[in-house]
Image 1: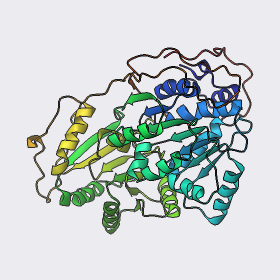
Image 2: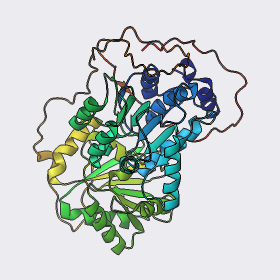
Image 3: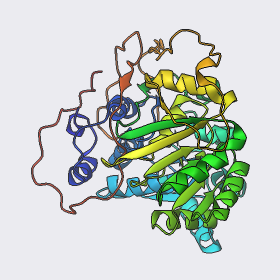
Image 4: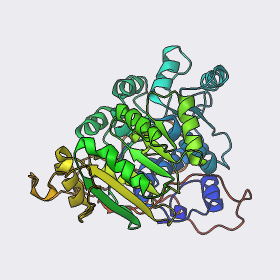
Length: 465
């Protein structure tokens, strides 16, 4: 489906035309019509599927159509990290290039006093779109710098990561301040039980859209070392002895390990830097700048950079610890082999991680190549003899009927005359799971002039699924 086939308004379509975006990704095709029709949406999709555009485009279109209070915070978008908030704000600048009075402000920690004063001024004046990390937004709320009682849209992006970072209570406190008429959208890369519970608490009769997790790019050469925990540092040392490696990310499960590994690599004269939550925002920004600019060869990081950071020329990803699930594995190794480049992904699998890694192989539907351990460090565990407890094949999940009645009667008084029709029928078996192959949208229009010729658009008819 093309963007022209939706009833996104002309200003949004002009920006998309200039940015050369025509075909929608699966997550956009499934979510944009539902959000335009006023439904709450729960989207499960991995990074790189275009989910930012899936919620930004319909919300910006509705805000630009008018009918919302000019002095209110009309939309709040929650992000787990400053880096993702900045990326959402950048995408907003591109998509909103031709919008009249719809602007945004990104609100996050780690700023100087001048930036904080600017946030206060924008929030008290009623910024149309606020993109914020939970802690920073809550601090503004506690001192009365903004009012959410008239907010029309609330978005949680990467909700699973926010829960991992301990933001559950912050999210619930913010949600309690929103009006009952607020339309809510929630995206998550995974769907553990805690995310399901949060969705029940926040969303009203949501449309659920779940995309199958993509397999890693074929250009990624996946390998693994089956080893014991003390052998891992020796393996890293051997890897770096074999060549002058640059543009490498080493992922660890805990920040203490990040610190230990970074110290060990520095002793080996490897040009590296750590990235973890104990660093100040200024320190994190400096590390990312030095890594992106090539001043640092190796980034040792927690999963804080596994999602939401676009670095196209990563040559190797090393999983010092086996990720918790298949989705996290895909997110991590997906940092390499981007933009048609080749890449390598190496995972260290110790004895206790063998069952988890076997599940990842089952998901991949392939056996990852096992490399021999370097000479002189002893033998590792026997992977083939490990006891694997399997409960049948991995279910990919089927859509479930939600029994939602048509017409939600939000009564939000948009009054924009767009004729957004309530749906009268919905498929009983819920959303169909589809495979994603799209990419996220960001950037600014490449051509500042509006197009002079537009293709024919459908008139006011809701998109049929």
